[in-house]
Length: 383
Image 1 (tube, rainbow, N blue to C red):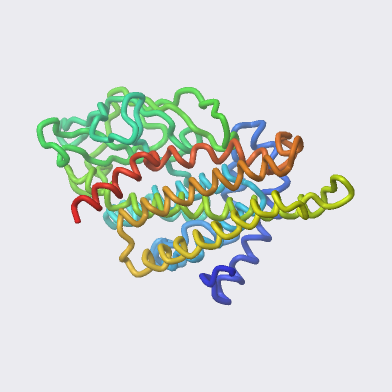
Image 2 (cartoon, rainbow, N blue to C red; image 1 turned 90 degrees about the horizontal axis):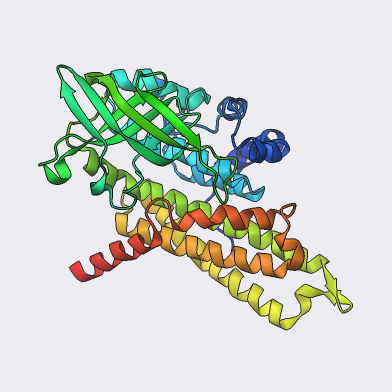
């Protein structure tokens, strides 16, 4: 049973994305891993191909496409070749940073910052996590104090996706220590702002091509026009945007599981042992049958979540379920894929090995899967 999420327009768009991936992604993946960075030319090529900033309205230079199925098509085609780092970078830009700007920036801010997300000239990052504050964002220590009409930001952030290349960073900061959840605000800090510095490019287990960095803010002075949305509304804004972020992670996990399963199935049909393809052995065959069933059942839920998001009815709890389930399934499928490849599954020249190290972060970022369980649990108790 295949997904029924895509119509003819989506499939035409997928063809365009596939052409981009084959021309601009596949030939560069090894270099990206070695450089620990995806070159800006690739971002601009993606913009020229029309696969960035889909949700940007016409008045800001975008196509104004709000059907999230097109974003799923992008994720699917990138997963097909195992370019998880690019997948993560594009999702951070479109599903997170751009989403915040479109939701909360005023018209002048949008005119200034949004058009570059369509062309690929602007790479964004969001700075929430700190050395001592991950899933518990209320524990952050980065502050922003008002001085006249300016704001002055102090603090440090870590594990920031696109932290090295980012042209602008949305910073989550505490603006009133006594206001509880109303004491946090969002600020846009642009590259080159005095006091804003980038630390080391972090050496990660996987996603090597994705630049991840530490960021520091030392008396960073920004004008009032850098405040994103209302003062004190930052935490509420985060809560509003988390469903899309977690849906995006769930989709990435789902399409990765599908791709790895396909690679594995092809391999076991070709690889022979004891005179026949290893895929014909019953024990291995039962594993494949279980995984394929789980993948298809999971896809039905993910597709339903996409449709709910398109209707504006996807809840934070259902997005948490999608993230929890799909990333756990991704881990299971990839682990089995490595095993069924035998020794070759442990060789980095095989995409299943790269998928193995790239996927581990999926159960951590966007809120750990333990936090997803707590969100679901609280909803059950509340009911």
